[in-house]
Image 1 (cartoon, rainbow, N blue to C red):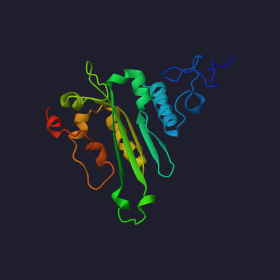
Image 2 (cartoon, rainbow, N blue to C red):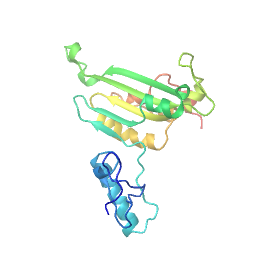
Image 3 (cartoon, helix red, strand yellow):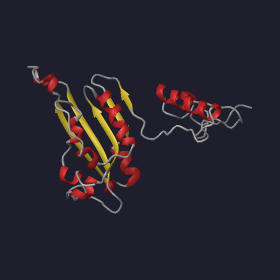
Image 4 (cartoon, rainbow, N blue to C red):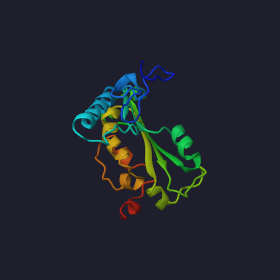
Length: 206
């Protein structure tokens, strides 16, 4: 008999790529995993580690996988959108900070109307017990401890930015971590580590 299938037409697998048939595995676009080549490669490598190298707990973590749409300008994203974060954690615990600007790379372009713009949004999850109504400021200490659950960049260089920041997001970085990171100037990435409200005095506390 064929392996169990999902209504979407994908092969049904567990977190270690096992199908309903013992000894039969599936990775990549045949499953419900994100249809990205690096996802399939990573899943295949980890499956090989488990089957042939004795790494019994090897499995691909599908959370916070960075993705990029190679449009002009490119769009890079990792983690949850604001809507997804609000649905998962409650709207009262989500704070979205944004920055919009024109990269200095295009500073001398005389046609200001057609200079490529960059937009950054970072979604933060407030600590347990802290909420916001969206109108009153969040206490600085609470904001410093808010965890990044999503980061989205539209603009030149978004692909390279998201690949780097995805590591920090996957490690559970907070606003404190971003604020305590010294910016590289002039870059677009510096906008992420100087998002307002910027509180380096809180960021410096251990």
